[in-house]
Picture (tube, rainbow, N blue to C red):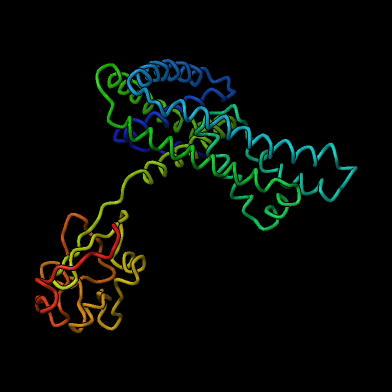
Length: 341
């Protein structure tokens, strides 16, 4: 039994909410069922999505839309080459060179397994290509691509797919703040119906699951997960400030739920872990001059397992716990930061 992942899309930025609703409506249209309640839900969701889509497009016009459409055509061209050429070797030329025919079948199979179709939405196409790229990453498939002369096309397919994702993310950021009037009302109406529809589908899966609906749920959950990952990747990591009159002020990128040991691992030239005392030490040469320093917040030593709070400022203290003093040649202790944000 597979249920729709219940996520609070109400708090999602507008552009990512739009992508989720686009995938939800698109996937529902492919379900073959005789359950009248489900068909009624499909019709109502599509009506509300259409209204939301029209309002969204009127309020979020972007020059990037044309660039994305053009790049999507180029990406589709490369995908078609890999799929069709491999299929030609697999089926039409198997009597000419059976060895290459086997390679063609191996390359073509992921397109079949993931039901790849360039006519799908970009969300669905991106998701399926990500899965195909994972299969292609194997040493065997990489050799097959080389033997069939498809390595360059495969690389261009990957590059255009990444460029497309970047442009979509950029467009999402541009339009993330556009939400008022008609669009706000259309979003609220669609979301309320979405919540009710998800509740109904999950209840139906409990009582009388159907294969076609279960498959729809699996596809949509995958789409939702991919959109959520793109949303998290699109957010700029906050930074944490570490200051000291000896080593200057430095900012470090902080991911959600980061520990200080994560930063120490990422900036191993700046910090080291004192395993004997279970604390984080500065590895700066200037810090070494004063016998070593450890991170502290309000005088309490920071441990490697402590969580990072980007809203707070951390200080480097001497290992004996005293406040560091500027060295005579430091001109007040200010130095040029060497750690990138």
